[in-house]
Image (spheres, rainbow, N blue to C red):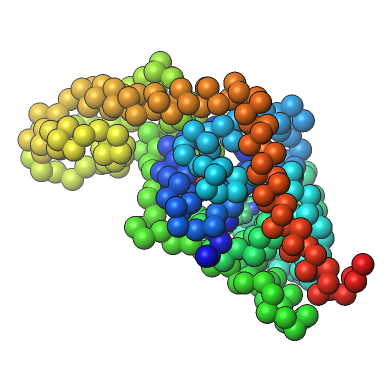
Length: 330
Ligand code: ADP
Ligand code: TRP
């Protein structure tokens, strides 16, 4: 069976984009593949988080993963830092990774532009840590967004170099996983591109948003002056509202608003109220589940422990074999 692996840095609560663009797909994948899903807390150290925040964020994201349907009985769900073998593989891989290829990555260039005062070696070697994550379980497929494709290419280059250098066909060359459907892109509430935690809190719907927070965000969503003639094309802002509505509202409700847009009788205030009601109904059970799981420290610890055991079993095997291949015989 093919192995799938994906990781997410614990940078904050999950939003609708993460849910539809990543988690929902992960939930489906776990039925068909040997899946590893992990929380990339080592990666987060490049930004020097304080210890309490780091720990809280890891648990928060874990509770949200579980609430979305990741199932520890079907997949290996783990925290990166509870599998120290990844650090050993990272060190070996760094020996065959060239500074030049790391310096050329777009993400690194972007980071040094944003934070010229914190250009640490961890930032430079971010791709080799990611390669270690992937190769540690000899994963075949990695579901990643566009921004991570370059990192995956570096992983393939490193794996190929290792195989060539040691004349072994040891690491599979991991491929980007493409979902059957086209990648979904969840739009933001302000008419500006995709929903993302980096572009404005108020335009991003988090799975944990309660009714009053949702109300504020949805009622403030950008609209336009209304359709000027029958069957006119929608502005980006209005198309975004319809896209969000299609996610959570019944088809006949969406159709009703499509019709009223087309005959120019639409009232955006009514549409927003409907969207709010349906979004709230959709999020309520997830919100409850997240709350319940987040407060169950014992359960979360158990899940972290089970995940670490499962992930370390696979990690230890790889490390044992890699050490042997490299020439460490003890
Ligand atoms: P953010 O943009 O909020 O920082 P991340 O980059 O951490 O989100 O995204 C984690 C995962 O969620 C990635 O797999 C990404 O493809 C997916 N994702 C994030 N935002 C969206 C979106 N608006 N639509 C679809 N998928 C998304
Ligand atoms: N770099 C990824 C991101 O920021 C997270 C990540 C770390 C990852 N290691 C990985 C993703 C391995 C896939 C595979 O989104």
